[in-house]
Image 1 (cartoon, rainbow, N blue to C red):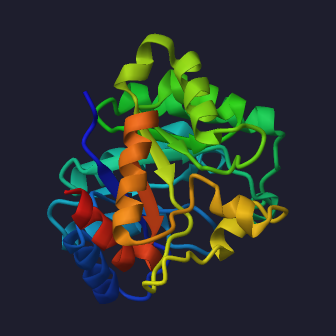
Image 2 (image 1 turned 90 degrees about the vertical axis):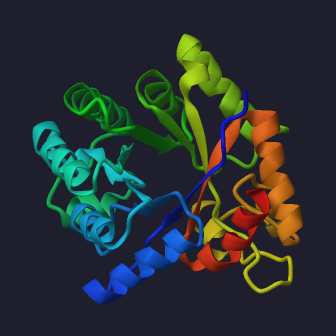
Length: 272
C-alpha cells in the first residue's frame, strides 16, 4: 500500500513575531504538512521559532531539518524536544544530522570531529531521544553510507538529500536500495523523504539551480537538472514526477524551501 503524500517547507528567516505568525499561517494554508526550521548559526533558533509557529497555527506539524546533533547533549536536547512537543500539542517531529560545516563548529568554540565520530555521536543522540521521547518521530537526513545506515536502524523517517547525482544510473534507486538493505525488517515501516532544492517558480518550467549548485558545485547544469532533487516543467509535469517517485521508489514525503512554497503549493493541490 502506498503512503499518502506529505509535504514540508523550510523556514529560512524570521524578522518579528507577527511576521512569523503570518508566514506560518500562510504556509499552513498552502497545504504543507510540516513546517521545518534548520539548525545553522545565523539562521533562526529552532525551538523558540517552532513554539511560536505552533501558537499561530492549528494543524501543520513542526520539525527541525535538521539539528546538528553534535551541538547538543542528549538530556538537554530531550528536554527541549519534550516541551516543544507539549507546547505544540504533540505536533513535533525531530530531524537530526551529523553536522558538516567546520566554520560553525569553530564559531561555537567546539572541536570539529571526524565524520566517523560525528556520525557515532548522532547515533548516540538518536538512541537517547528515541528512548526518552518515543512518541516524537525522528528523521535523519543525509546521503552517505554510514549516516544512512544509522538512519535505517534508528529513524522513523529517512531524509534523502539528493546530493549524489553521479556514480549510478539511477541515484535515487541506489540510495533507496541501500536503505532497504540496511533497514532489513524495519524498511516497510519507514517513511522516505526527499529534499527538493530547485523547481520553477515563474511559470517558465525552468528551475533556478543556484541552491542545488551550492551542494554540487562541480556538476554541469545538465547533471544538476538530472538530479532527483530538481523538478522541472509545468505543474502537471512536477506532480507526475512526484507520483513516479512514490510509485518507483516509495518516496512520499517531499520538502522544499520557503522561496519555493507558493509555486509548490500548486503542485500540492494537483496531488490532492
